[in-house]
Amino acid sequence: MKLYRYRKINQHTLDSILKNELWFSTPQSFNDPYEFIHAITLNSTDQDWQAFLLKFLKSRYPGAEDDYIEQLPEFENTIREVRSNPERMPRFLSATENKMRSTLGVCCFSARNDSILMWSHYADKHSGICLEFDTSINPKDFEDRIFEVKYCSAYTELNIRDIDYSELARRMVSSKSDQWEYEQEYRILSFTPGAVPYVNSSLTGIVFGCRCSDTDRQSVMNTLNQKASTPKLFNAVQAPNRFEILIQQFT
Image 1 (cartoon, rainbow, N blue to C red):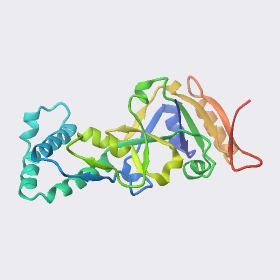
Image 2 (cartoon, helix red, strand yellow):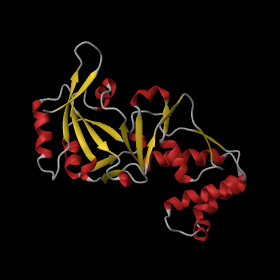
Image 3 (cartoon, one colour):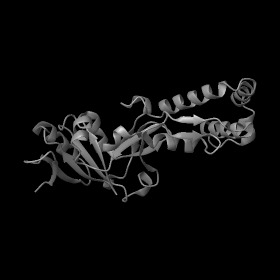
Image 4 (tube, helix red, strand yellow):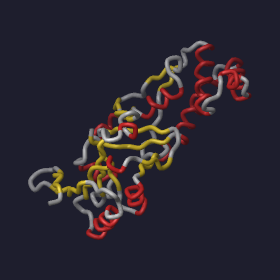
């Protein structure tokens, strides 16, 4: 599968190409304030709630045994507070969502490289580039952990009885408002934000925007000249008689 990442041409983009890195941003930095907001239902038993809290804390203490987690003051205090005052449970779940927004890492892609809106919004008003990745070349970088975004008109309902922390994160990262449906988005989830390397050959193409300057184009070419192998190069061209972008390979 081919996936695309629209980028502004700046030093950060050039460095990421040179180093074969993808940047995973925290959801709280996204341009949509509705990211990671869901209707989390609470029709769960006390046992269900304890199981969810146990899994949640184990995600923060990898490798820890259940007995160790259950003896943590954080576990005991939260259970005690919820039992004494069930109204605190929604507050804890809200805090869990907020924590995810600030600690998870998400890298975003599109299924298309010819979206006029995407070029306008994410590639510096058509002055940037669009990176093409072949997810099949090194599946562990992409296909083993990528999610297609599901678009909907209302918050996705999640019941903590049915899912653990990791599944909650996956479901939260893979749904958003249907007003973004034109993006045809795919996402990779990481439990830590920041730069993550990928295999050089996975970058199979670079498309230059129709407004890309000669200076920026040369900066990209200079960066590619420092790499062991280079991707195919394309130009995004405005169609002469319709609202459409044509992708043409360099000759």
